[in-house]
Image (tube, rainbow, N blue to C red):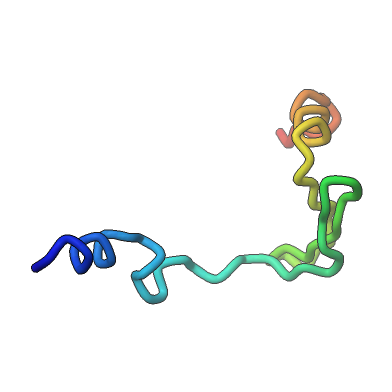
Length: 67
């Protein structure tokens, strides 16, 4: 086996069906400027944030903690 073949086979992106399908449906695509909306498996719609500062704000908010 040559180096190019070995390099090609060692990439995860070359493994078919490696990633599981997402467990949510995108209703409105999120961007760094604006949050999006998704529908989760339970059927509920929720906000989808990808901006670091928005995620940090949510994770630090005690109202967002589920007991």
